[in-house]
Image (cartoon, rainbow over all chains, first blue to last red; front, side, top):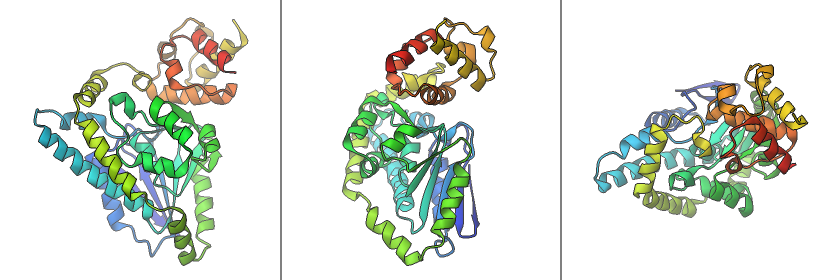
Length: 258
Length: 77
């Protein structure tokens, strides 16, 4: 599902859960496992990338979510959603605040929860194939893994509203213009660029590097907590379940365009 | 056939290893290329890059054919 290496102070975390690194309980546990074992005293940089052709990450595992929302007891659904959200927020917050320079290498699909995962990184390098999207409104919900506050930390409100309220996707060039990513590279050049960046980061004094990150990248705790509450309230309505049913049962090759 | 649709067909056929000479402007994009939604996103990136346009996904919802996509590209240029 995921794999990681540590070489010359650089962790490389490879996401490899087909079809496109959907985030369900399995991926969540794997990410928790990585974070429990990461040794920040032996490293200066973490590179996160996908080893799958389709892209970085397609977001939350909607099929698993749909299965979890079967049954009629709203209290059970609320408990399930809260438990998952608390855990995924824990993972995202830990990734966000790691005392390492974190570099996300993005190619292809970077949608929903995948986009939210990417937004935890300090630096995003997008290959030309990358596409970023928050499709949640199509399901009657909002991003729930911390995406809105983290997006607000990166880009202006005009772009946030366009992405959130239309559910449209943007390409790497547009993401660069919006300040969402800082480098765009050709297809399959992302890892080379990330390794070069890591080598540079490794030259710096650790205390100065960590202080710079903590200063410039505070965690928007209040907004993250508020987003979680709003997500749960929206997700408990029948709208989500109906949308997930349509998604799970559809054989339309264009569900993301619906 | 206008230049946009010709270029579009060549671009899409090359990306997905299809035979460009067998594709007509009125063919369904998904059927002709045998692609899924992930590949469609890839094609959209290629199109935006090649024609230097930005096309919101919601403008593509009713587009089925190469000719219709070519019209959309030309409107956005």
